[in-house]
Length: 248
Image (cartoon, rainbow, N blue to C red; front, side, top):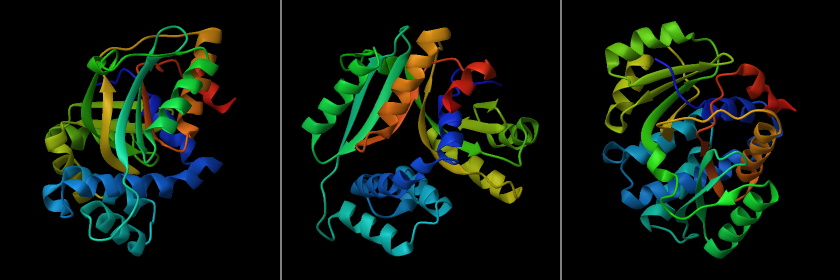
């Protein structure tokens, strides 16, 4: 099994090793808060379960987690975050899907639009690229697990797809199967870095040269925006040399 786009795994690995991890707690608090709007009991709330798992991996203090849940359920006052999605294209025409959690959608829209323009991309209309992405469960192993090892457990547990990029292994599942596959890895003693809900492209696009380099700068700049939670693209990163552009 293999994935079309490795942006999520590459982005995770880069994020785990650079200074931008300072944004992580803020993003997790926003995600927990908005997930808790659908109920503060993670047993019946898959999105909240995934957010709490990410917070656990990040060693977020329990008090921070509890406050975020209470803000989401309305037990205590707090910022009212709104979830928005923006869609667009990189130079070369690769699809980009951007998730935003913000208390000021005018500011968020302006910043996202400016970033697309600055790096030669185009902000599209709602639905222009979302059709190319499917919502999936994602389990990422940053180190210590090979693709073959993950595949042996994942196939038996009902996973959909597995990909490997530069030592980072990502397993995709149906949303309903995320917890089942995650528990199978837990029982096998295989320690994953993240287990969350993500978007996976159904088709990919190869870019090269200046178009690829500029597209990567666009994705990085979008990811750096304060209101942006996640960025997905259908760029094909099967060429490890092209993936190395992230480190330039």
